[in-house]
Image (cartoon, rainbow, N blue to C red; front, side, top):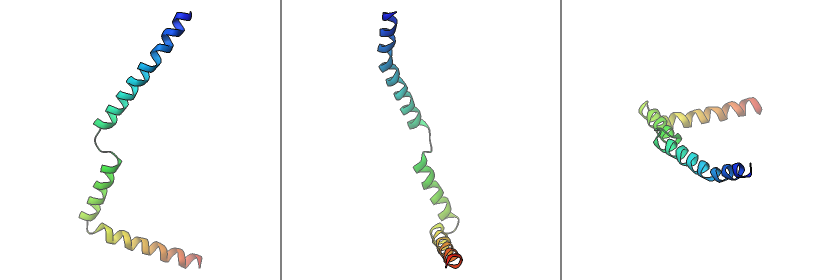
Amino acid sequence: MRDYFIRRLLLIPPTLIGVTIIVFAITRLVPGGPLERAIMEMQMMSADGGGTSSASMSGQDMRSQTTSCCG
């Protein structure tokens, strides 16, 4: 019984290292991480007709709405 527990305890580090390598490989091989997704959304917004100006206008609209309702 003691040999069984020792064997199991010795298998923990290789198992953790193996799982870590597999998860790392999967995250590197899967396309479209969060940064690439954000860049693509910004490019699509700018292609639709100037996403930065419309974003700043919506920010101004929100400020005017909050000041009109709160003060």
